[in-house]
Image 1: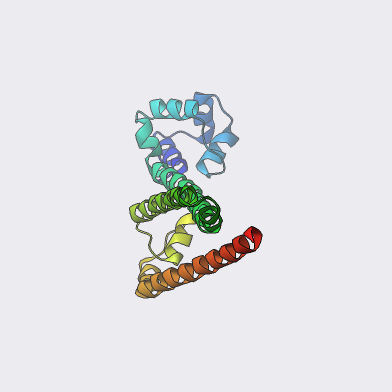
Image 2: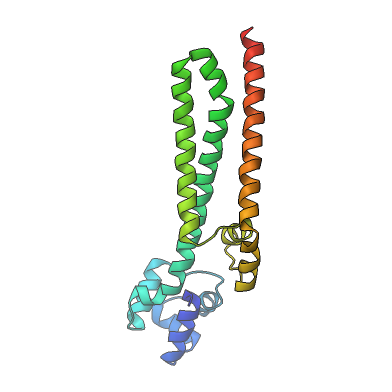
Length: 192
C-alpha cells in the first residue's frame, strides 16, 4: 500500500474529514487532498506528525512506498553501473590496442585495468538484475520503467531467453572484434 492510500485509510478509520485532518496538522485541505490522490508527498515532518496522530509507526505509514523507493534507487544505480560498464569496456577495447602497441606491457596493463573496471560494473548490473528477478530484455525494460510484467508476459519473454543470450554474446563479440580491428588499423596508420 502506498502512502497516499495509507493516509486516506487512517483518516477514514479515525473518522476525520480532510478539513479536520488538515486543521490538526496545520496544512490546507487541498494539501491533504493532493497527498491522498498521490499528486504530492508529505515531507518528513508531516509524515512524523501523521504517524503520531494515527498512532502508528513511520514504517507502517510508508511501508508500501519503501519497495517503490528501493526499486527507483536500484533503477538509478543500474543506469549508473551500465554507463560505467559500457564506457570502460569500450575504452578497454578502443584505447587498449593503441596503448598496448605504443607502450608495450604498460599499455597492456592499463588495458587490463580498464577492462576489469568494465567487468566489475557488469557484475554490479547482474546483481541488481538478479535481486529483481529480471533476465530478459522485456523484463529489464519493464523494471527501468517501474512497471510489472504479468505472469503470462514474463513466461513468454523467458521462452526465448537462451536465444536472446546467445544473440547478445555473438553480437557483442562481433562488435568488439570490429572495434579492435578498427583501433589496430588506425594505430598502425598513425605509428607508420
